[in-house]
Length: 418
Image (cartoon, rainbow, N blue to C red):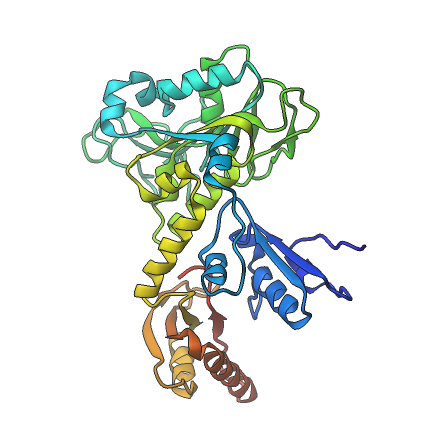
C-alpha cells in the first residue's frame, strides 16, 4: 500500500490506481491556490475521486458550508460523533465578557481572563499544560486614550499606535514614528490603554498571575510544533497552537484550553466570518485531552458560540447554507469575480457572453495595482445549474482577450472571500 501525504500541491500528485483521497480541515485558506485558475485542493481531490472511481473523505473538527452541501445533496455520507460521545470527550463552557461581567469581576477588567477561567487554569495545571489561544500577536496591537477611549493616532501620519514591549514607547504601525510625548487630540489626556493585546502581553500577564509556572509563546515567525505534557501555560496565536507531545502519563493533549478575545474574529466584514471563527475555535478545542475542559471568553448569546458549546458544527454549517441559499450565495449559486483596471473591466464585461439568468453585480472599487493604478471588481452570479455554462463563458472570454492582447483581468470562480 502506498500513501502520498502533502500540502495542497499533493492534490495533483500522479498517483496510479487511486483508491482514497482525504482532505483534512478543508476550510484552511492554505488549501486555496493563489495562482490562476485558483483551484481548491478539496475540489481537485473530489474531482479526481469521481473520475477515478475512488473513495473520498473530507474531515475536520469543523465543517465548511461546502462540505455540508455535499452531504445535503446526497453526494457524500455524513459521519459524525454522537452527542453523548462529544460530551464525554470534552466539556465546553462560555464565560462572559459583557460590560456587566467586567464590572462584577475586576480581575476580568484588568486581564481579559475572568476569575472562573483563572480558577480553571490553576486546577488544570495540576495535571498538564494549558493552552490560551489569542487572535493577535505582539504586545499591544492597538492603543486608545485611557480617559475617553479615542483610538491613539500617530501625529505624523494618523496611523494607529502600538506597543512593542512593556518598556517600549508608543510607535506608529504605519510609519514607525515614535510618540514619546503622546497626548489625546480629543480630550488632552496623556494616559494610554490597550483594548487589543497580543500573545506577548498575555504571556506576561499569565507569568505574573501564575508565578513559578513555565510560560511558552507560539506565534508567526516563532511557531512551536510541540510542547511536553508537563504543567505549563502555552499562549499561542491562531494557527500556531503547538501539539502536546505523546508519552504523557495523564494522556495526550492539553488539560484545558482557553479561547480569548473571541469578538475579534467576529468583527470582519466577510461572508465566512462566523464559519472561519468556529473552525479556528474548534481546532483549538480539538487539542484538549479526553475529559479536558474548554473555556470560551465571549458573549453566550452568539449562535456561533452556542454551536461550539454544543459541538454542533454540522448544524451550524447547515444553517449557514440555508441563509446563503436565500441570499443566492455559494454554494447554492455559482459566482465569479472579474477584477481589472476600469477600461479593462469594461471591455471584459462587454465581451462576456453570459448565459440567460446571470446577474452582474457592481463594479465596485478593488485593491489598486502595485503601481497605484485604480482597479474595479464586478461579480457575476448564476444558479448552480448554470455553473458549467458560466465557466465556459469565462474561459472563452480569457481566450478572446489573450488573442487580442487586451489588458489583463483577474477572473476567479467561487472565490473564498468577497
